[in-house]
Image 1 (tube, helix red, strand yellow):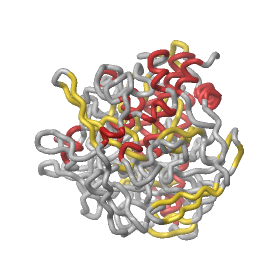
Image 2: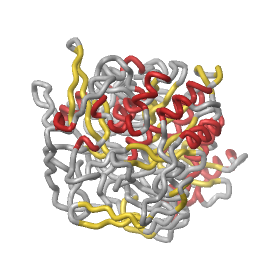
Image 3: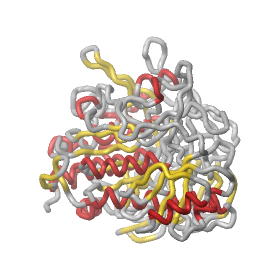
Image 4: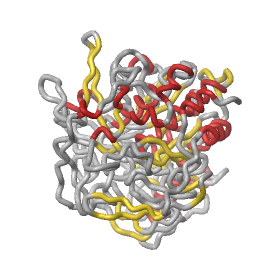
Length: 573
């Protein structure tokens, strides 16, 4: 599956001609060694000592060894260090360790989040972010209240077409999920103080594996000035908003405020691996997955891809040897971390990606390397190049759907890659563009203020933001599009299944990931390819054709079907 980077430029690939709509820590950070930058050196089984010797011969120093995942943290300088170490037979990949931030004085300021890869698209009423150099368009949305029909449940349930699509509105009462089920959100953080998340937020188990980086290696703004001393945000903070939206789709409680999630009775554990700027580097992802396996998390949601490569190729002729070794490290390191977590009972669910790409037949990658900024190049790719973790082994990948039930225009697809599908939102699924065709989820107030989406009195400035209050307590919500939004629907359904069929174990309840996967597929509603299979999307005067392969039981647009919370709540074992 692929990453859902800052939301996903919903139409980046589709509409390059128009415009899109826009604690504590487990591992304390260390200053970069004066001996040079730090690297993660992955070695073969039994190859630790030989790899250490390779580091020493190349003029480097080994700082630490991670025996669980089989890699060294080492320092080394000089242009040839990586290639020299990588040439040793015991070494299978070498990646820069970009997880270490540094402090910079100054007040926090809004930062420009990147879009691309696979995060979520912001659907703003007043302005939209352009892509590909195209002129940005303003998309006017009607008064959202005119689109809301009466609905029972939480106050904003009428806006949650996504929950009705998968039967979660009915499942909430029958099988809300158990507090013994732990759902890890590996993302940009979770606003644990949001009133529509706090009741289900497990602060004690939450961790932040990221240190904010105000600037990148070239001195360009990355995360912006640090908000706290030491640049390590508390575990209940999300300065991006992406992770908070994801968490609320999974488990916003039934409390008479705002919305309800797919599994409103389970616990959310924030396992932060994403920077404020929306980048997800390798080391924090490794740490997050290892931690999830160690503490007994039942299922994790990964709505992102590992930077800086959208497609990771180990032998692409367009890449230098150093770049090839980095991509090999991403593939190898993440697979080891995913295996580690899965072997300890963690079901792995990822967003498929928002590039409108047939992942079974990719041709060009124009987004890599996405970091540092300005390093992107165009290169040819093929099916030997993979998006991580979306296409990693053992991961359930989720394609996104619009409110009509069609595959969303931005969603990646592929008969080998799409495992299931779920609502991800699609503002263009119908006549014109409407925010309410996207997915409504919780939003941190500070993020909305920084983005100018609420005024000085705290009132929303457009139909893309909603405010709901109860007894003087108010919560904010925003509409987002992306496979980032689709994945947590599947994660919520998995949490229902684990709640029903899990047995007592570490962390509360346990259910083998293979069993969860089988049940998720069994309860999904099969959906055939459209007729004709060459489906034509119309966007901003352009016709975009995407081809669906496969049969009703398993195809590139919908996988094994649309996840179904009601069936998960009622299926017999």
